[in-house]
Amino acid sequence: MLSDTVRDDLIKRLRRIEGQTKGIQRMLLDGRECREILTQLTSVRSATQSLSAELLRHHIRGCLEDGSCDGTQQGLDELITLLLRA
Image (cartoon, rainbow, N blue to C red; front, side, top):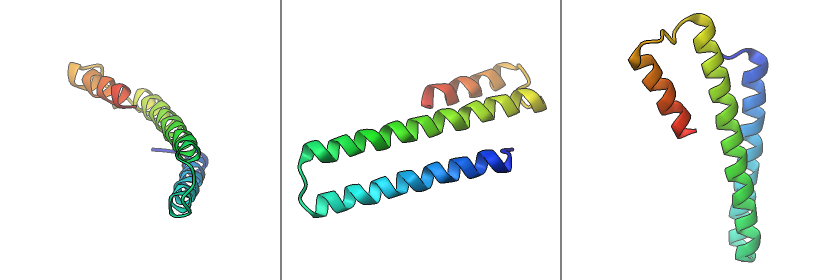
């Protein structure tokens, strides 16, 4: 379970990403240069990767602290799958 502070930070990041994607939509509608749009898309990708890494970090920490990562092969496989997706 995420703390209120962490959850609020993640929501703030998602809202920033949402603003960036809306900006990219406007850029497309306005006929902006592909180079500019690609630069903004790179920023969004970086922001979502950073958000994923932060959420994964909290998931693993919580999993280890509350014992839900039980050390079984299934539990380890789940963590590895999450790491590879992030």
